[in-house]
Length: 182
Ligand SMILES: [Mg+2]
Image (tube, rainbow, N blue to C red; front, side, top):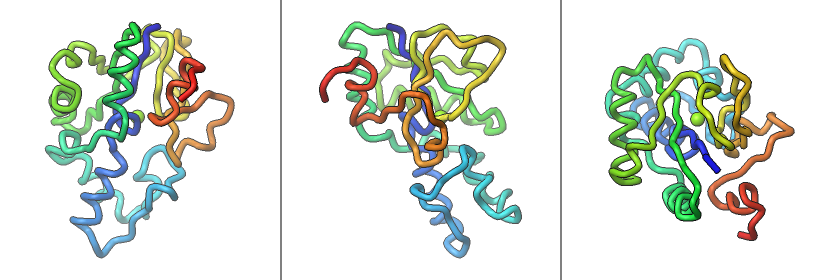
């Protein structure tokens, strides 16, 4: 199988990285704990007058580079690869952050190793990419084509309204992806 794996919210902890910076830089302002997140875009869950400050956090240099890996992702992707599957990291960069693309490459090299850098696909429209499965935390993915892949949701509090698709996290991926006992 060819398995496409999204970055933010799947292997890179965007939400955790945001909260950490937000609370450090603006301790006087309210924050939304991850368990209470219900919209895909976090800025939509903050008051309108804080929107610019919220965006400033993830538009900053080093934001994407400093995200922590989501627990279990490095082991899971290495194991899937070792099982003989093709694994590509397929991410849609935040084009409004001019550092994002480079930092994503640096991030993958740093946590996964140099050989994984060749398996990065950055594109805004994932329906153009061919694969059997796309693991992604975005509830609904559309584009120019009907996707060739099955979208499996990476479980996050903000995508639980999306029903009717398989969902997994790095603690149960074997049973969801391959019907193997974990
Ligand atoms: Mg994502």
